[in-house]
Image (cartoon, rainbow, N blue to C red; front, side):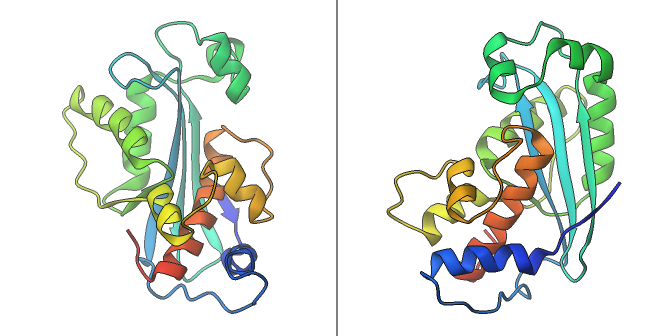
Amino acid sequence: MEWLLVLGAGAVLWILWANRGRKRAVDLSHLPERFVVFDLETTGLNAFEHEIIEFGAIRVNRDSINHETFQTLVKPSKKVPRKITQITGITQAMLDAEGEPLDQAFSEFIAFVGDLPLVSFNSEFDMAFLERAAASRGHKFRNRVACALKMARRAWPGRRSYRLADLARDGNLESNDAHRALADCKRALIVYTAAADKLRSIS
C-alpha cells in the first residue's frame, strides 16, 4: 500500500507550536534517507505475558511524499481483554475475522522493515514485544532504533504530558483513531521529524 504524506506541511505545524508562532522551514536533510516508523497494539504491558494484536508501520522516503505502509491485525492465543478493546477499538470479532497468526504477521513485518533504521514512539515498550517474538523465531534485530518519546522530552522539556495524543493535539494534528497502530505511526512520524529538526539529532 502507498500512503501520500506531505511530510513538510505536517512538520511545519509542529515547528510553529514549538517556536510559539515563529514560522520557519523544516530541514529534513539530517534524517536517514529511508527509515521505518512502527507501532504495536498489544493485550497488555508485559511482553512476557501479553500478546501483539496489531502491527503498523510506515516506510518513509525522506526525499519523497510517497511512503509505503504496513498494517495487520494478529489473532492472539487468548481472548482480547475488554479494557484493551475500549482503548483501541480492536474487538475479538475483528481479530477472529481478520487477524493473522503471529508467525505470518511477524514474517511480513520483518520483510517490510528489512535492515532500515526503526523509530517508535516508545521504543522500549515496542522493542520488548518485538524482541520477544523474534527470540522464539530465531531472528535478531540489528536495526538502529530511535525513540520519538525520548526525543520529544528533550526537544520540549517541561511539558505536563508527553502522551502521543496530547503532543498531537498541541501540534494541531488529528487525534482520531488513537491507539490504532497505523494512525499512531503517522503521529509519531511527525513528532519524530519535528523533534529531530529541533535537536539536530536522529536519536
